[in-house]
Length: 517
Image (cartoon, rainbow, N blue to C red; front, side, top):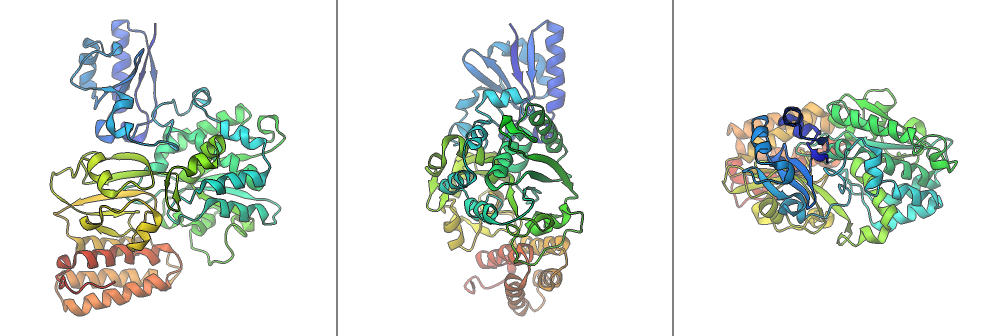
């Protein structure tokens, strides 16, 4: 009887040698006459254990990791196909605490299924949300999303149902669904994991969005640095067309939705929705003035939904199990779950999907295991390169949009980058200004000029040139960027800069008592 062996095919596992491991297992099985079925699944998101190999047994899936090609012979010697003991044995996959304590709604299939197999998707509750949506009126679909409390997972946290309702009621000859897959924040990878590990859930979510607002065309705007996601998305879209889940007559309903992937060149500013639209229209990625909002006048001047990958990938389970089911997770106005990405100086980096309300300290120590160096964690940056630096005194803050806003911090896309006590926060503040200077589209003066002047001011502070005056100048410059920039790139660069200065003044050579808001 054939034994199913799983070896991840996503870019994280591949970068750690998964392809060579898969070949070694196939060769060793052939050599020994072992009957195996090799399935290339997505990563479970436990990156310190990748490549993690799983074997399907009567007792469930058992895990081994991290496996290298040199370990394969000994795995066969230990009879791992029957769950044999081996130094790399991790036990039942579902019982690994890092996974067991999660609430995986959006990532429910990631790491479990073959990501490009439609049959596998259907066998694991796929397309149940779409089938429900096909029997509902557009306003009913929008209401279900509104009732779920889902907010944009790309960073702005705008209520998804309100955005959809605006597009539903906006007049337009052609409406569009655009997925912002330009994931560019440092330390973030949840979009990539979905697109590589379960692309059908994004395809299904976008199809439901089209039915909800009367849009018949969708685009996934994907950064060119994600070739494996590109490959899997196209494979999923092709399979969905072949099976009638996309096209002019979805599942025989007479309703239409077409979808394709468009590649962006990787400019950070194209993660801003209006720059993305400009790029999608074939123009240079420059920020547009608002109003009009994209929901009223978006792609090619037509009403357009722009949502992030995780937002759209969360829709199928809402339409499958209902808005109330999803809303029952979370706290306050932050409902549902958030895929949190642990990166940087952390012992156990990876993806953790949890309901809102989990604290930073739980994530850093219960899941992350502390810093990789074993030194005290000095700060974390949450929400990408434009997120605030948070000191240890704020680690008990629950992950909640309002709780973070009260601390002048942002949850953003759920990325958490960890720094131990050897980091110099003045250097990190300079990096934030330099990042903005490099990535600015150049349309508005506060961002274009302010970030360049900011790097110069930071250099003078670090070199102790008239430090007190230059710190005040840095605050004034940050105030101008915060209030005068056209989009979040310039407007949020002061978050890491001022949070570093306020929480760690000693790294700037400033008086620790002279903190400012």
